[in-house]
Amino acid sequence: MADKRSRVPSSVDLVFDDDDLMSTILLFVPAKLLVSIIKLVSKRWQSLVSDKQFRLMHALHHRRRHNPPTSFIIRANPRCFFYFCPGLEIFRPFEFRFPYSKILQSCHGLLLLETRKTLYGAKNYSVYNPTTAESRDILIMGSISGLCLAFDPAVSPFYKVISIKQRDKKHSLSLYWIEIYDSQTRSWTCLKKPFTSIHDANFFNGIFWNNGIYWIRRDMNGKSYYLDLETGIVGTPKRVVTHKRCNTGSRKNYVMESDGNLHYVSLYSRAMDKMMSLKVSVLLNDLAWFEKHKVMNLSPLFTKFQEAQVAVLCIARLGGDTEEDSAVLFLMWDKIVFYRFCDGYFKDIFHHLPTKEFYKHGRLHYQHNHAYPFIETLVPI
Image (cartoon, rainbow, N blue to C red; front, side):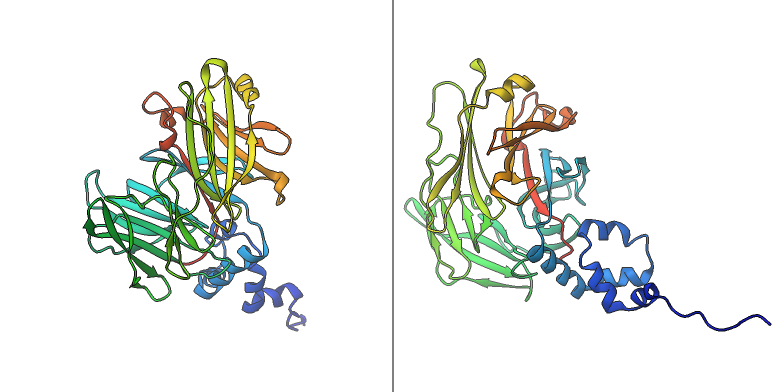
């Protein structure tokens, strides 16, 4: 007679049968990989990964204990986007749910979107997770002068949406009121004190940094502001010293957040003699700007790639975690070029970009070409 004794479970079986142990193991798997594999595994694993509490723990775990690689959504033109991962050298088309979508802000893995169903349709606003493709509509009552997103998964899995509304006009100035939406309570709160600015000011270009929202003027002719989210106080940072305006050549200014710093980037180029220089300043905690990087001679890039149309995509640490890994990514015609500040090393990290989409109107409009960095996260919306 055959031996009918039951099989003794192996250690692997014990691990796979223990939900708590499996959840602990899955905490160490990158978000993008989890999203890709949960469709291929058992329903039990899908249930574990889809659990809201697990997703919150995963987001906090990876933000606090790891330095996850940064990916980007690049806007080639108002209706064309691409996903770009420098570490894996992936570059592919990216589509939103609505055909008319505009990225207002990227904040540590979440995007703030303005969407329309048709070209001239009503504006709607939402918070979107590009990793999970989940979104939540944000109901806005009345007209607004600005909308911003505040989210730091290292501190909290919940986000805030800041709405700026213009109310009273006095002479050449207006009073602006601030309302804050909290995703934890799903409710709006109006700050008690308004602040004063010029008529019809634009507060849609805010950047979240150091528990505050910063509206930095790129042309430096107007006034910049910041909102301290802890105190509700609105203040003014100091001006940044950048390239002087010249009769020849072009100057392009960018404001971006990366690696925990708020950067002001000034790129000056002159095609006639293939001259290009770059200045990168960071905002310090005392709201003063400090010039961190200064490259006065980027002509080797002109010589190598023979391209006069240049745009700055981002400032990032690629390939490491130290200050020596700080680099800038340039868009140069059909290439993305990496330039490292510490030693001047540069290389083409991606080529054969779809130039038809990037140069739809015949030339590179740097304000229409922007990279929105985000960290892959499972945080629920």
